[in-house]
Length: 236
Image (cartoon, rainbow, N blue to C red; front, top):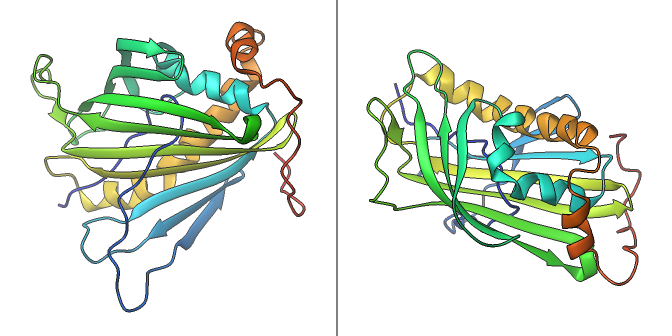
């Protein structure tokens, strides 16, 4: 048994992660698997029970459309893996929201929950989006019976427009789940949570239609977004 970091609730977009402790030779991201057009990397760190996790993919969708999906936290369970409940607690703008998330833990792992503060920034005239979600204390809403609250969780989505309807998405997560979970679940989560998260985000982008047209209109930059140069990006 050991502790695991796993959460896939995508909320608004991208986040700052804890810096890896400085060492004689800084650890490097290690590629562990590519599946469903998602590349998964881990960053080994002897000071952690499990590594930091990163997933990368390219999605054929406009960058603001993907941002709209991520910020719509009340619909997160339509596409987020193992999501049981996701609901807004406080929203101050399109790009800043505090919400509750409850995730299903497959037997014998207990369900996990957290209160998240999520915020996003649109950068470089709409060419890039950075979104963060961070677990925060919220004593007024304790976990339900039998549910374990995440002790720490930081996540992010970093998105770059490669073309008007082509977006590179990098998803990272660093968490301390609280409680204990089996080793097999640690290994599985490290590989497949990024794959499920990003492939489900791709599927959701294909079925939303014009749901987010007002959001996109509010945040579209004055000038047309130009593609960020990319050397032969993989097919989405």
